[in-house]
Image: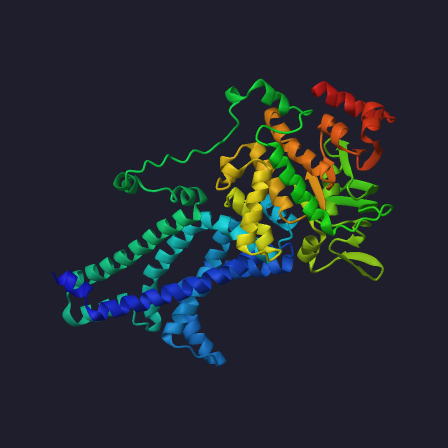
Length: 550
């Protein structure tokens, strides 16, 4: 009973409130500074990274007790005077920032780099990408560590008594000094700490549940109790992970082949939707018969390999694409095909030469007679309206199919959520995935993920579509459904550059084929002519190899 009396005493509760205030303020400040330090540590600039590492090294390597004493005693000698409470908040915040920087950095590094690349391709800037894509995914691994740090700091506020902060432990010591009831008083104080840290742990569970996209989607279903009360038996949510082979009809299987006109989920109405949306996206393209839409002049690109010198990937590529043209780029792995696509959308920086899209450089400006990347790179990508579909899909893992498609229109182009949602649903219908709108990427088959990726790119109303081997990561059965959507885009007049190994698709859909090898264009010309009667021996060798694999 005495323990309960002490736990409810105004004296100890006031001390607990001070400890909570210090913890909350110090954690907020420490996490904010920790994020900055984490980003500095990840910088490629050795000076910036070194400054961050030096701070972390000092703050992690010295006791918090000494840091508090230094702030409280040394700063006044420099003319900076702080009260006890402010000293505790600043001291704990500065100390926590060093530890937070490392677990935040670990969380950020756990997010696949492809997520940032996909966001950049959609025109998102670094800040928007960090806030909308990277941090929400990193928080899932960071949250338990934040909760642990919060609990440790709440308990560690007892050290603030060294600078005369009248918090919970300090007040308990004062009570013991007057009544010598050591055991009871400190059991009461410990109980208050335990109660508060328990609330932090419960908060952690709630936050983790909210951050888990799968649990969030499951929580939308009525509970067993509510279904029993209402008498409504809501079926359990079933996620599709692959196309069931046993249910494929012979005719449908043929439609999945390269010569089929559509995949199993795409109706004629769906194809007409895609064509209409693509035609709408092309309304702002200024077509001039003799003016190429994409021009690559003497494009060079190399990468510096540590200890092995430079690897030259592109060696003076000259390349043009006209409005409404579909160009298929073929070649063995390592020939520079994907790098060329990334350079067109400025996901990589040119070493030499220039690339024009609709007569403009994407994210470059002329300085002293030389092209250099502009500071407003994200805006340049957004203005260029270049849609890109990647080999590995690169959907945002924490967002549903619908949310993936809505993200860029809202965050980059300022479209209202209501309009963006309506357009996204139309696009999902166009790719035959209306029933999968609320599914997470992990619950979709490879073919479905790629179709969502195409819809996401189309949501930006692109003037040019880049496809980087869009079917190479798919099972053969799923290839047809992706190619069907691409056929519809081609028929709508979309300008497309497709890196692919699908020879039949290139023959039937592409206007022109470009064959690359070892960073140069070996042969190009009308698709059927190059694929049926190639002139260069290297092209013939490649086509024989591909035919042998098929």
